[in-house]
Image (cartoon, rainbow, N blue to C red):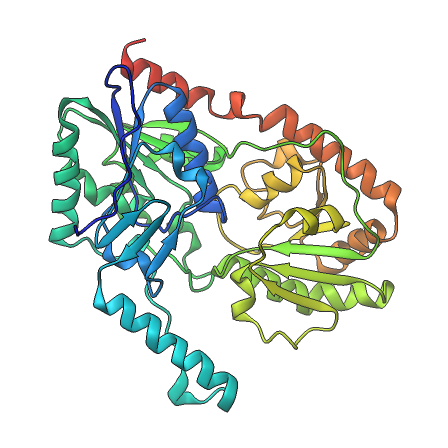
Length: 425
């Protein structure tokens, strides 16, 4: 047994340069926005000629889940190491008694709450989000150990989130360093408790400035980096869209929201259910809203009429196919909204707020119904929910937008150009 999870090296006819992705987030599949984005970037890095090592120096990554199962999408990595876990095929098993104890006690509390109801002594305090936890000496040593094993093949170290840039201390100075920005966290201050972290702008700029390259997901954040981190190359690399052949207008009166358990999702969905949904239901009594994802953990599932909280599902495809209108009613948060890109690529009619379109307003202006006023949004949804023709028209514009502006070969062209320069091509 070792203190990490290992995946074998991919056989190569000659050693390729190594790009080491340093990540404290749990990545098991492209099953949430941040994981999907990281995996898309990893694919482009591999296509540019690198072996990618996913190095995860956090024993907190497992939370209270002692066994992680990895999707085949993680095959993009030629090596995968997790501090405190043992990898066996597509499964990693925690070696930490604390993780197993948390799993056991959490399960007992869950069963007890179902039997006894919500009692104060059965309150379940969530584990901290590992991404932004302070770095420990053993975590830095783990990164340094992995960098040492790469030796002179290590050409690039990539921090997943700005909070991971402390890990650059374990990387040789001559390796290029990049950070995947994901979001501008300092611009969330005062807008609700965030599930990742809060940070002030000065500290965020300092962390971003540790990198040679900053990879931004949308143009507003790329411009922020260019203005505030003059020594770093600001690279725009949006989330590429997977597109379908034809628009999908879906069914009348079927709405869909997909989101994880983060503050922007829960606050935005609450605003929609309280301010917009009653107006939609008054106009369309048969309207139904399906909520998919862990965001439902923040809600009393009986609070809103004709809203179904489905939790995690095995397959999103039938939910996307049947939905007539996808909603994205975010009221704060930065970064490119990855579910928006996904919906455009799937040729769906989308109703969203202006926050959802941050950084892509001009690109998506005609492809999405955008309203911040509750009544205006309700009116747009009411029209779309009752008209297949209206949904078909908007969905066609969405698909055209995805093909024109979010194709993989175009959105990652700038990044691939930098990678080719690094390899001396």
